[in-house]
Image (tube, rainbow over all chains, first blue to last red; front, top):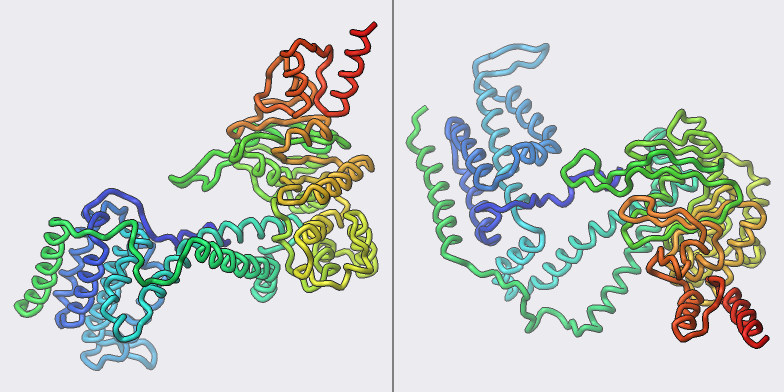
Length: 269
Length: 282
């Protein structure tokens, strides 16, 4: 049911080194890390790289099950990747199952690609878990600034994103109220086959749409009334300020990525 | 007993670290035909309490009975129990979704499996109840109406099943004085015809004027259950907010013009002043 799912609002509030780190650096390091992952060739390095996860968990003070939570929706894709590689890589036969054969090379390749996906998903979810959506939008806006010259409406994009983010909890709250109101009039959202249930949500979706359009109009008016005239010359209430600590962590992140690449080159098996 | 709540606890996000107690240990009974006002500060649990009475929220512990039927017992009891409760939520116009007024009002009877001809009659009767001429409004889109009319259509959509218990959560908020008076007339009319009313409100004057019983909710608990007269008695000082009439009486007393009884509505105040001054002049 809408509202009981924690999938939205990934942010996990806590006091930790990772929470304090500047969001721009988090983004840069993680993008660098994911990039580096694609240069790794040996399964052993991939397995060793998994050690980064407990390290990040300690640094961020997140409960481990939150990582599992971010992986869970993608379990099917992970399994699919693994099985495809297991079955369609030529090599020595591991076992035969009807018309298909699994190979030893397939097993390692499958693990390799699945682990790469696991790392990409979990490491990037550390960004959303330790950064408020607002800080993240700010960071993205600042990192995209160079593209403004190419005509990308960076400020407007960031503003749209942050307004959308603030609207989500509001819309969820409103949806919950409307669901209750329709339930009180005998609406049934829980029984019947899937099509019936989908149609059952029309009495919720229509008021929700009507409400969002009205709210969007009101917001536009309220913004104009307070002198909003686009991004030119606008300043921020919370400027992102880099401190020495941020640079230290950035260096640590870079060192870790270098270590990973070096290990891949040195390990022989 | 029409409504019977026993030891109701309600927790938001029960079981998780963000859990918050909204109601604790609420027990109360409401007899058929009563007009009950539910008052208390914002966030005290009034809305939660009405939604529990309506069977929309399931209490964490405790039981809800409507006409003796356990709302969270077996499915049949639940359906029958719920059918006799109507809930008008805050800003009920938000619940409108159909293409015509008649279709929207017909939503509940359709869900309840009432058949075609009977539905039309019920819809017309509900629209008339809230002062909308069925012939004028039936085929209009609810979204083309004024705010006040939308509210009336939404309320008609709850009245349509002629519930024995009508729960209203701040029904007059956002209405102009005329719309407010109209709506209150319909509500008192319903009460006169036998519908039990439970109304959440912040309007103390309205409580003094209309209710025969007041429940005060404070931080999720039932802090008082009394009559408006006893609750607003300016001598006992039980309640910090007072109706206008009580405050005038208190000021008069302070200025040396002591009124014997304790008026809480303007009519009673006028009567008391006349009586007191007649006595003084004798």
